[in-house]
Amino acid sequence: ATAAYLRPRLLRLLQIKGTPSGADIVARSEATDLLRFRLVENDVFEYVRVLTPEGVVAASIFPPDMPAEQRDLVGADNSGTPGYRGALDAQILGESQRFIVYVTETNENQAEIVQVLEFDEEIVGFMIGRVNLQKTLIDNITDTALTDSDGNPLTPLNIISYLSTRSGAVIADVSVMDHAQDSVRRAQIGLALSGQSGFSQFSMRVIEEPVVSYYQQVENTPLALITDVANTHVVGDLTLGAFSNVPWVLPILILFSAAAIWIIWRDTNTPVQI
Image (cartoon, rainbow, N blue to C red; front, side):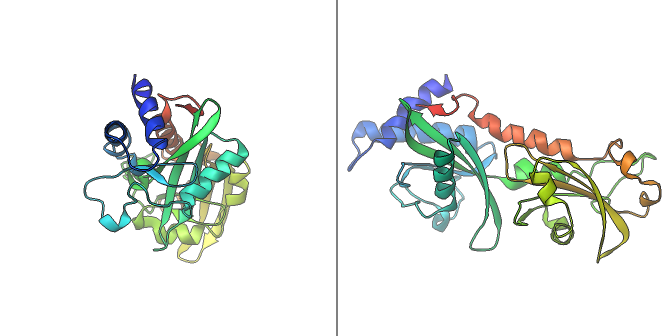
């Protein structure tokens, strides 16, 4: 029902040329309200915009408290943005969706999901959502409500998980960012992004004990998940073989998080036919 309601309105707003008619304005308002309800108000995305094939903003959905200077209003040119470049890459490669990660001008790591919009086998636009990293990913991989085999609570320094791209861009909670930025230079990011998973061990300048690290790829994304363990309470009995059996290994959480993001598009076909 949601898809049937949204598709004709998306198509209409993507076809607006010049001054919009009253019906065009209504269609844009209705599409914007639905996208805000489905994608932004549930904290999965911070910001969603619909672009024409040329990269012009046809609809912009953002929370009321978003600073004005960060909003791209209808008619703005987004052809030079990372999201639009990711959309063109998806189009060239025949992908219906693409997950991109990039560094902003303020040196922050950001992630967006691009959705290709098609009508009668022709690409008519793109939907690009800026992922709320804290709510969808970071909170899940920094869950500290865990205990060891003796029932002792584990602190954030016992288990540290973070996400990284091939270039070394790090997505992590601020409380573990220093560790993650040091670890990423030694972790097996390349192996993870080649589809492998496994364990490695290395030393870090700020930790006396060796670090045991688990690496794996987050499916359908350019992200590797790294989980490090280095703690005097557990390191004496810790072996690579035991690592995968203890209940406080976190990698599976990120897979659920990624699935939660992709399911946002479940009411539409792949690629989205409007």
